[in-house]
Image 1 (cartoon, rainbow, N blue to C red):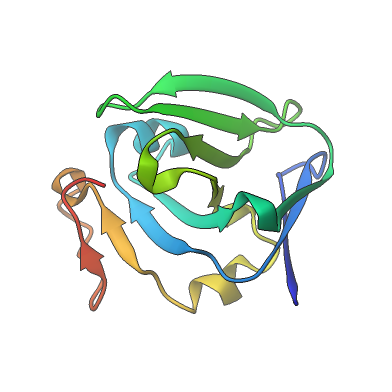
Image 2 (cartoon, rainbow, N blue to C red):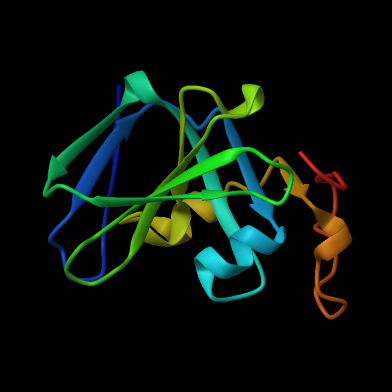
Length: 139
């Protein structure tokens, strides 16, 4: 089975996973805006059993999402790049929500499209919905 790899900006932390993402989505929630420093995050939900850290040990920080679930962010202690998130909500159990910008072949992976846009009620007005992709007001 083919492996997909990714790393932080400085290369101190790296990971790989096998198989296809369980879900591919954009999230426009307020928490993801803060995580990304932008208008949304682009996430691939990777089953934990398919995910391996190959270099470094990321730091973590926990926060509470606006809907009450606990989110843990995993980031490089050297450059601060968020590599993935984990959430305790039932829909996200055992998923590493990999930040797609950290993938080594992000452009090729993004060309395959998305499954869903989440928290679209917070999508900025100058971004349009992705055609053919499920639109959800929350999770």
